[in-house]
Length: 168
Figure (cartoon, rainbow, N blue to C red):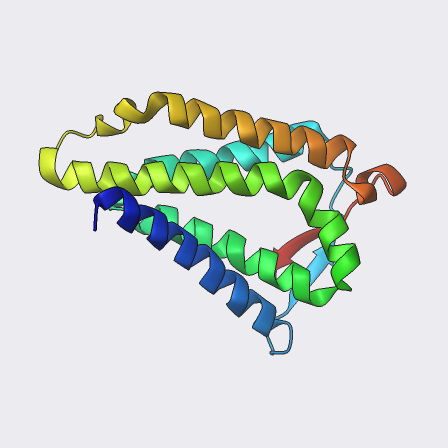
C-alpha cells in the first residue's frame, strides 16, 4: 500500500471514528455547552479556520500527531452536533459550509501526514513546501467555507447570534 493511500485512509478513519464517538457522546456525561459569546462575524470565523489550518499544517513536525488530534476534535464536534439535533436541522447547519470546510481540513490533514512521512526520510523541515499548491487550495476551501458559514448557512440569516459549541 502506498504512503498516499495510507495517509488518506488514516485521515478518513480518524475523522469518521471521532465523529462516531462524538455522536455517542450525546448520550454520555460529557457536556458541550452552547454559548453566544459575541456577535460572530466573518473575522471570527476566518481566524478560527486559519488557526486550525495553521496548527494542522505544522502538525507534520509532530509526525502527524497534532494534525490528527485536531482533525479528531473537529470530527467529535461534528458527530456531537449531528446527533444532538434533529437530522434535518443539523444537516441544514452543517452542509452549506461544511462541504468546503471539511474538504479543506481533510486535504490539509492529508498533506500534513504525507509531509510527516517524507520528513522521516529526508529530515528536511521544509519538505511540506512540495505540496504548496494543495496547501493553497485547502486554505481557499476554508475561506469559501467561512464565507458560506457567515452568509448562507440558515442560522446565520435567521439569527445573527449563532450557537458556538465549546467543550465544558
